[in-house]
Length: 275
Image (spheres, helix red, strand yellow):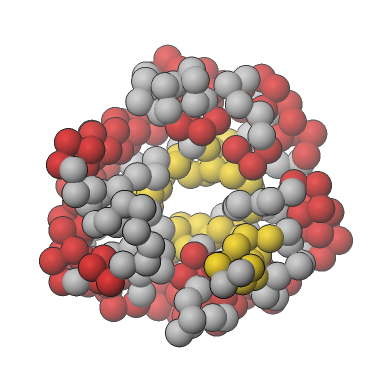
């Protein structure tokens, strides 16, 4: 299958052989893997990873022809609690140093919020918040350069890195081939910019050379809240989006992400997106 998947959308946890076998059964050859979720108990929410455990994950997946395209380490780079902020920064750096054991070229995160639990907040868009975020990213990119690993930043509508202007600011500040983007068009949808397909086209137009991969999902507004829904039941023209991505990046990394119900989403993929 030309798509990957976020491993924890398969809903098998702390059992790598079973997860690997299920992914093979479903036809996947690559994935996003987040130890915090898929190995929640084994890794103590991701904070107890080590080289041996990472290598075990890699071997277990590789036995079924599966690789980790993106190693997920999502957290808050600008948490107002400085201890929590530093704890996450140390964890992300550790994942960078373990990426080779996982067989993963890239470690990915969103950029967080200055007010956890408050969404949205305009304070994420201040110059101070954006600059703090970029400085934090720069620290991780320096670690990645030494380790020979890529850092992936996923822009999000309520995060400091959230649009062309803030992405440009980040890229102008951090001039490194080790810094990449992971684009989730639905994650950038807003009242001002509601068309996920146009967002994907804009991101490709500006950043195609540094986009490492894409997240594929669908959404609609339910009770005024943007909510991920089963493929084909929301606002996104998924066949158009996939064609746009493939035209820009043949054999692109496209990870199915945030699937409310796995079976109907995969049925839609097979019937509409594999042509």
